[in-house]
Length: 97
Image 1 (tube, rainbow, N blue to C red):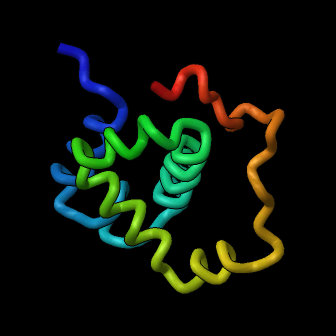
Image 2 (image 1 turned 90 degrees about the horizontal axis):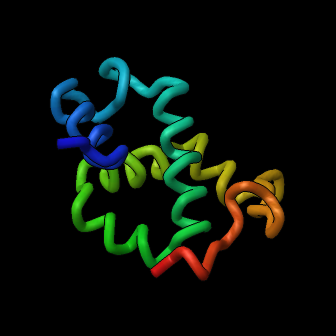
Image 3 (image 1 turned 60 degrees about the vertical axis):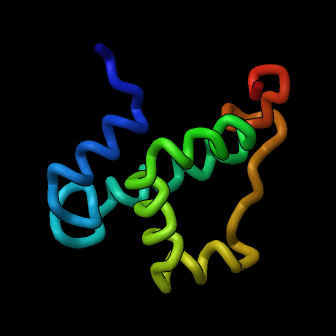
């Protein structure tokens, strides 16, 4: 049976035995996964709430990365760009069932 991407990353985090994707410390792949999940939360908020319960490892990873001082500072700064209404990660209410 094919696993969803969320299950894939949940499993990878669990198998790695770490709180991070690649090694025992924060790396660019962690930041990339954080941005992808943030973007999906914006584009499909209802679906992501449902998936959150099923992919607890991914949710914990998301919270852990957001809590890092450098990421938290950026998220709260005026440098952070809002999601674009016309970009690839825009809201898709018709698909967010």
